[in-house]
Structure formats: structure tokens, C-alpha cells
Image (cartoon, one colour):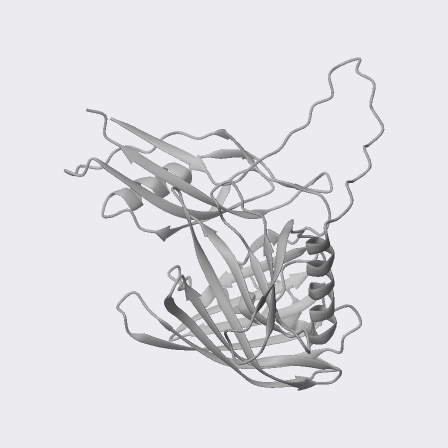
Length: 343
């Protein structure tokens, strides 16, 4: 019997041989027309709708959302955000009687769930409201194409394919440059699936236009709907909001050069007593600054017995911690644990 675990993080190391002479960096190749156009569209969309950009006024945003739960029933939730700056924000997501609080500081954020089974889909609401990818993330664009299928003519910037054929895409309304759709790949062990979010009903907030209605799909399956109820100026928010909640787990928000954690001890899980010959479990965890796993959670079940054994094994792993600009930093990662019964 054998069980394998694969870390879904890529660590790139460049070693300079002892005695070698460092060479001057090669000049970057000129950008393609598609790359230039795509970057311009992203920049214009940011200027139009990024209510969290540097110098933007502090605000309070309230929203409601709904999603299809594991029992295929529609579940309702509420979202509130108070934002002052990139280093001072607070978010609260409530589903039924479960509450998640996120607090952001300078290059750090803290997360606290009132229960261990906070729904994954509800956890994506804060990302949905943020709209744009982190400022330090770059994209290698392959093309910009015009799309006239919808009610408005759009320009869609599409990236080059990754190792599993995955692509990201951003579609903008051609006249206003408002973001209409964002498509991002959800990497799986054998493939990737597209997770796309639609933005509509743009209205004014100060100098910005911000969407009031949003919907997300996994491939063609409807996953999440959200509606912004209000965005109001919040010039003097309660300072206690921005204190890390007692018992919260710290995560890194690296704005510089980050290096992924590397497992240095990863004992394999035991195969559970079952007639099944193979399975896999998707986990998420936070690797702390001491290299030890925290908050190990099942994100995709492999079945009875497999989930428990996977969590037990990964909780005993040891990592060389992630770094941000050379300093140890806590970071959340995904792990795929594969079980194979050898014949």
C-alpha cells in the first residue's frame, strides 16, 4: 500500500555556481501589441472602478449573496467591509450562524472563523468584491479579441496557456472600459476548470463606477450571486475593527518578492480500511513562520476515511517557511493528497 502527497505550489530556485561570474541581466524583449493593449485595458479599468486604489476615500460596503450548498439548497449570506487603506481594512462574512472576520494590516492579514466548516463558496465573496487581481501579479497576454455576443461590445484580453492548458481572461466594455467578466483557472490534479465572474449594473461612488450585481460560474454551473446594497463614505471608522481578532490565524499579504514554502518532512498518510483502490483529497492549510501547518481543512473530499487520514498526515508535515522579501511569512497553500493501493 502506498499514499502520495503532491504540493500544488511551484518553487523556482536559481543557483549561481561557486566561482561563477554574474552576468548583466539581459534586456527584456519588446512587448507584443496584445500585451500592451491588455495592460492598458486593465489600467483603465482600475482607474474607473478600483475603489481601493491608493488615495481613494475610506468606505463601508454592504452586500448580500446566495450560493448553492452541498445539499443543493440555496444559502443566503451577508457581507460587510470597512476599508481605509491597503494596510487597514476589515471584512465580515456571515452565513447562517457562521461568521468569518478578516483584518488587513501592512503585508499581513488575520482570519478567524467562528466554526471550522465555513463554506468555500462564501469564502470567495471578499475576492469577488475586490474585483481585480493583486497589484504584484503579472500576466503574459496572448491576444485581445472583440466579443459582440452580449448586450455590449467587449474587448477580452486572454493570457497564454499554462502547463495544464489553463488561461485567464478579462473582458471590458469597449466604450467605458468597465470590467464585465473575469475568468480564472481553478487548478485540479489532472486538469483545470474555469471559474468566471460577471460584473454589471455599474453605479457611481465618488469618482468611481462600481458594479452592484455579480454572478460566478464554475464552467457552466451557477455557483454564486451577490448584490451590493450600499457603498458609503466612512471617514472615521472604529479603530478597534482593525485589531487582529483573538485566536485568528495570520497570513502574509506580500507586496514584494515572495518564495513559496518547501516541505522538508512530509510523512505519507496511511491507507484507510476500505475496498476502494484509489482516491485523492484536496486540502488547504496555512504554513506558519515556524514551518508548521495550521488550519488544515478539507477543500475537496476523497471519501470517508481518506479525508481524516490526509488531514492527520499533513498536520505532521514540516516546511521551510515562505518568505516575503527575505523574511519568514505565513502563507496559505493548497495540497493534493493522492492514495493508491498497490496491487
